[in-house]
Amino acid sequence: MIIEILSTGSVSPNGVGKIGSPEKCPEISLVGSSATHPVALVDKNAPEILKWSKEPRLRRASPISYYLIEAANQALAPFPDLNRTRIGVVVAFFLGCVDYSVKFYRQITTDGRRYGSPILFPETVFNTPISHVVATLGIEGPVYSQIGDKSGWVTALRTAECWMKNGSADHVIVLGAEEFDPHVLDALHASRLLKKGLPIAEGAGAVLLSSKGNGSSVKLASAKDGYCFANRSEAIETAVACLSNAPQSAPILSTSNGWNANVENFTATGREWLFDKKLNCEAFTASAAWETIRGIQLIQELQLTSLVIPHWGITQQSGAIHLVR
Image (spheres, rainbow, N blue to C red):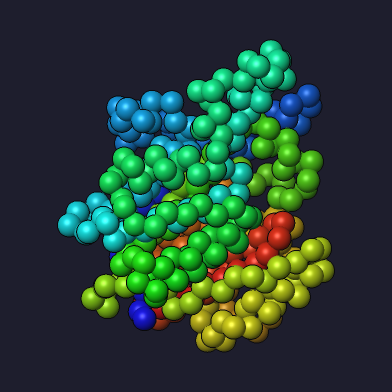
């Protein structure tokens, strides 16, 4: 079965319909520390974002729901006549609904357990944002949320591939999304997972996959995941195994943004690598979606016949996808 990427959608600090972050990002202080780190935030007052606040079920939704629904709507917009009963949606999260989770638990820790708001709690559940998306956009196919590190994006693509191969859906919107809260910055700083000075970002990205395309779009030739590791030495071993399945002649898009730069450097021997300044921040599964979108753009801009995009996980696995024209 040939799987085509018909269209894409994105919400990022660089703007709605764009990817990456602005050249200059505000420095945000760590809690209880004088240290700061650049953070790239989505403009929540952008008209494309604000319009969704008029939807009744989105009035109390977490910001991540707005990012997801706008990205999904962009991906669907060029194809208004698709049968939405045959469209599936799968989303990959790393941190998920951080904003309302922090608010909910702050109520419990400051005011007592019985004062945790029942209004806030539903918005802390990973499945809630995607339920908002499908209900608002009238999508009736299979729906699934997956949780993992950045490489979970590849697992989400494989899930979509399975749905189309077994006939559960004709089209699938695959989404990656994250939102920011200062607690995220503290956790990442303490874990030393990311590169110093690399902006932490938020937003969402979407691709619309189809098993009913006409052959004119970029195609998803393969998605390989499950290369798991328990430590950084194993991460190098599994990265080599992951890319051993990639065609030697295909260039590889550089996507490392932290300690995994060592992993990427080790696997670079004898291969052609592309480096792109638009991938200048880290928003985890949202970044993974943006990397795929940028890969599609590069295939078109550079007239490439194929491109491999690794999605290096920072906590549990690596994966890669192969796009062809």
